[in-house]
Length: 125
Image 1 (cartoon, one colour):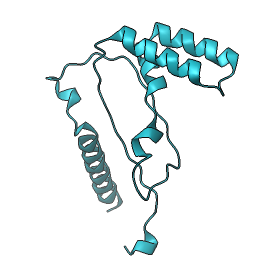
Image 2 (spheres, rainbow, N blue to C red):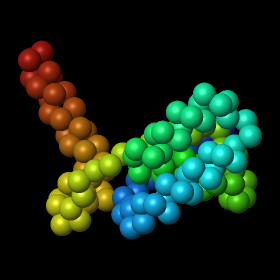
Image 3 (cartoon, rainbow, N blue to C red):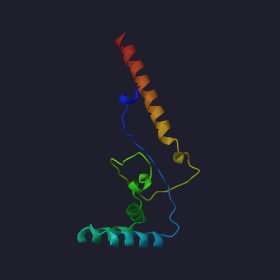
Image 4 (spheres, rainbow, N blue to C red):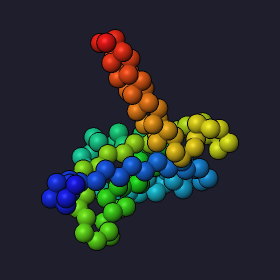
């Protein structure tokens, strides 16, 4: 594929598992960020404060900004971003948490598609 045929857009997927060691510090920082946001309407600000006080994952979501991850990368412009955070049960020894989990899922899906194609070909004979 030549350069003119390839897309200029790249999807970057990042998955992080973070341990909250100081919940009060995290919540405090998120509340400060919310208070400093001069463009946030008062009703939304009240909702944001309540959410951050109830859930550390919400506090983290107010502090982590995908733009910050790529702002200093030369030659790129962030076109779109979304992110979420949630509290999870984490066991680093569990196979579920292996980093290549998505790659394995994609391989499994390819094998299933190949098997279905073979089955379909056999049925047409």
